[in-house]
Length: 136
Image 1 (cartoon, rainbow, N blue to C red):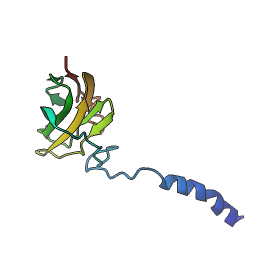
Image 2: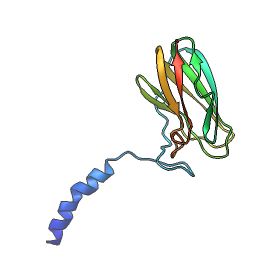
Image 3: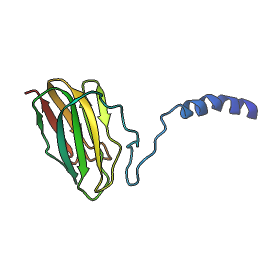
């Protein structure tokens, strides 16, 4: 009977082991250390953004030309932040970074409007979000 119980539990243990490995930054919840794949190619524009509690500055930047856009984010706040852009080919995300640090991500953006935000904890819901207008 005991052997049967162990055999019945094996698929559950194997299934649990198939999940994504996540390493959380100190002071964050539910945000991975993993940086997503970035766009390759020549950069057509660079957007510099300052991240503080709980704001992106500028909040709604405009980029005149479509193509690979570099986002240079600086953490000017007092807690860990990150940056994520929801592009047409999926989300591009920078690893979390501490106060005083910077990260750059590159995203291929055709003409349109795209959401960007800090994906850590509830920062997006607290106002760390905006929209990027490309080629408009």
